[in-house]
Every structure is written in C-alpha cells, then in structure tokens.
Length: 108
Image (cartoon, rainbow, N blue to C red; front, side, top):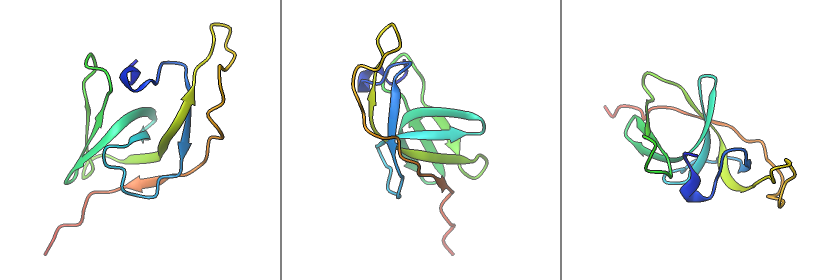
C-alpha cells in the first residue's frame, strides 16, 4: 500500500516501459538486491531516495557508492484485480528494459 496515493495498490499488475535515463521524480520499478519495489525516484548526488506515495511509509535511502540499484523500468500503468483475481482492465504489455544506476563520477 506504499503507492496507494498514486493509484497503485497491492496485487495490481504493473506495466513498465524501458528506462532510458532521466528518471528524476518518475515512478519506477526498482531492484535492490533480491527485493523489487515500485516507488517515486529522486536522486541527490550519489544518494537515491525511493519515495512512497503514502505518508504512512518511510522513504528508502540508497547510497549508490555502497549499494546497487537496478531500475527495471518506468511505471507505465497498472490494472487491478477483482476479488476473484480477474483483471479489471488492460494496462498494455509489460515491456522489458533494465538499466543499472551508478554513482556520479567525482569531478577532478
């Protein structure tokens, strides 16, 4: 329920488009080690904040100099399911697309 204020609920099928850079403030599908999460992306230098869209949840801080973050894609829509598990609407195809994020290079 961390993204409920963006209309993304637990159990929704999330569509994602390939990430081609420039994800600042976009909703992304991110992989941290073996965990996958959907959050709004904010980067400040080598620190990324994965921001929930629900005030009951805390942001996730990722120091790119110490931790790996993989952006699986940019959120492109979702569809919910009925209590019986039947999709309510089509969100389009789920597209593959991965781009690793790394810390900015230090300036000399």
